[in-house]
Length: 174
Image (cartoon, rainbow, N blue to C red; front, side):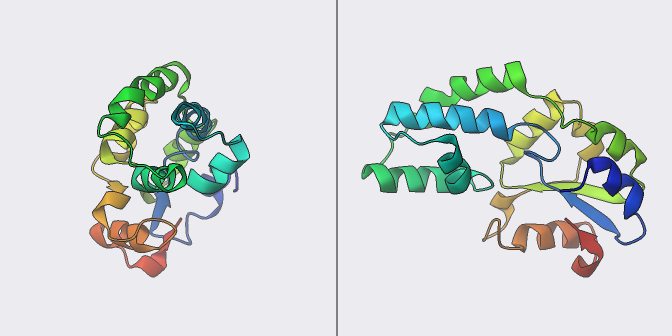
């Protein structure tokens, strides 16, 4: 992926809309989530290395995480499983979450319409963007995979974001 500054400086004439992912692009959250996912899965009885977690879960929805975990363990997770582990995620994010290096400057220089489209929930994106000070930049232009039938890697989320913002999808870049 090119450095965020190159996006801000180099392709401004090629697109009418830039669609950013959130985790790992705007906020440096993926490494935090991966470490906590590893701890949660181990506590549930599934030992996975960091590379395996990346391969199986990064960029996928929470529903995928739950389904894959239940499939592997052969049991349904308790209804309160998320509540049980939520404090692990919350503590790690409060302590370690930051904007991706250079993204604030890139966004400040970007003269194109832009939005964020992510597999994460609206609540999660509002929390992470808010904590890093990026929320005002994207207010009213935040799109979640929960809004479409097929999440990433299908293009539905990006097409939905572009159409909602009145941009022909062929003129949007991700």
